[in-house]
Length: 244
Image 1 (cartoon, rainbow, N blue to C red):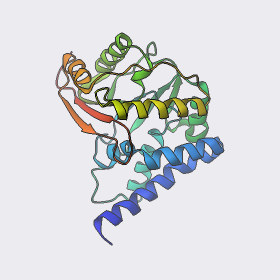
Image 2: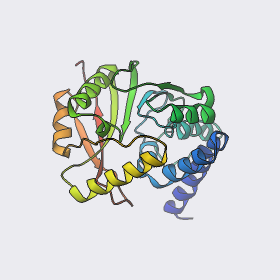
Image 3: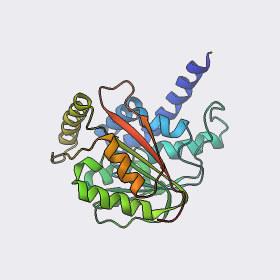
């Protein structure tokens, strides 16, 4: 078996394990988890590239039904069983997730699937308290609030991070107009299907996002994160090097 084939096989094993708990949360929760974890490249990238370190305290802002917490839990299980791929970065064993989500139905699905293996808080990211953590993950949610509110959330997330901590932020690049339009259209459809109200979206260009993070003292590395999709998504990896 080639290395690429082995990676696909190992990822499929992790995907199966991470999707399975959602069966207890209902058919929609399981199908959504299976499709999102399987098709969105960001989850595989975060885990296989070691962007979440072992024993990290993780804050997942806008966590939905807990789709990051589930594979993180299964990473620990696979590594404990000696089944973690040697070609991947170190498994994020022992990662502890606090998820903040505004939609009660998503919080209920997360709790039904994952129980007390992670903490899920039903709250608004604009007002919810952020605990001290090692990693902040913000995937595709800041565009739901206005630019001044985005800046406030980013500042509070920066203050929650310990020295040496990392923020993982995925955004849509407003400069890539076709990709952004496609992303916003799909996002609106998915939001409606999940039973939520569709709201106005607030985008920024990649340069504007980078400038804002750098103003908070973050060195930023930007990585395209829309492989296999028609979107204009970019993952921004920002490392804390000192006090704000």
